[in-house]
Length: 114
Image 1 (cartoon, rainbow, N blue to C red):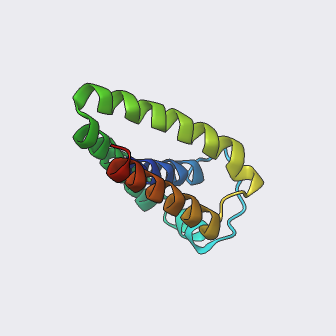
Image 2 (cartoon, rainbow, N blue to C red):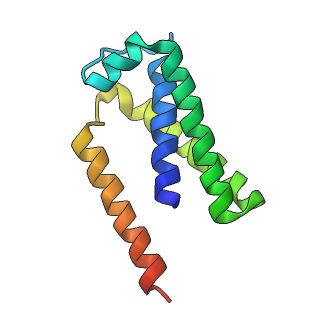
């Protein structure tokens, strides 16, 4: 569940970063081009993804710990996006491999670490 919350938070913040007027972006992928064209829809979708990530954290960890963990995840993801997005480190293959790897680790730890 935390992997899903982390991924949704990353995508939601990336949508907000891509719709920023201050960031100088050169859209390369089809997702970046869609965000550049549909600015208001991307902001709504980014907000919905961040809210969904917050709800997942609240459900899986409780009210207090879920709120705190969401804020920590949001700060970490925001720093990562602001630092790495202009360098074009993110592509579909790397993000999918990181998500798969963290999901496998999360499932392994929850199932076999007892």
